[in-house]
Image (cartoon, rainbow, N blue to C red; front, side):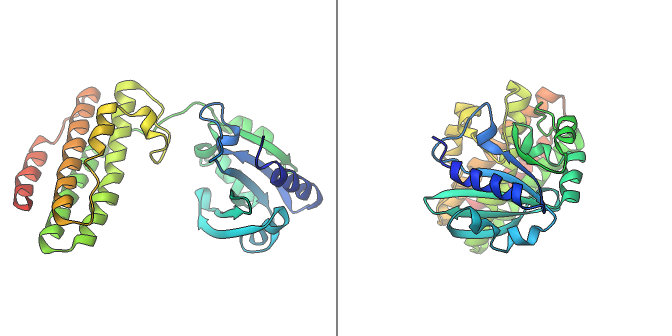
Length: 277
């Protein structure tokens, strides 16, 4: 049974009655052929309207049900997204575009980032179906890095590893932890993705989605040691484990791609980290 059926029916009815609404397109798990929606999934929808403010900050969403929690955040293509929890724990994410923003997002490839795994046009008064067919490719193309970009990322990671160690030594534990478990983990995820694509040609999704399904078991085991409690000793351990995993994957990825790996920078980083232990 579709938990969101009532909301979708009301949205379609509203779109047919409101000439300001130009398109309603479903995206996300409800439209995917793989890793389909389950009882924990939300409803992701793109609404194109000439009056976006009513959806973002007005009472339009209330016409679909009782909204319990709601907030707005920036999203792709210069648009904004209203995220809501309706009664019954039904979470709905609405990307709100003006017609110009939506067309630009489609033509420039921004929309493809969220639509290339599937989409469903519920309503199309703006004639977007042909434009979507022409520009949305279901071929998944993971982001790759050139050799200079790759080495820049490795050096950025190593620099901030040393930076985090200095914060630990100074006693700035909050700042150190945010670097270890946020900033450095962003690059660690990038490297896990690049390694996995280079070696196994797997679909790595985005933002770590379903990482436990596509990453090597050894990587998952190593990740258990990479996150820290709010404790100096544990932070040092997590920092060293994060460095070790990142460098192992980075050096193997460089070998696979034929890139020169900055071994001296890695060794220098490890020497400096000895002071942190």
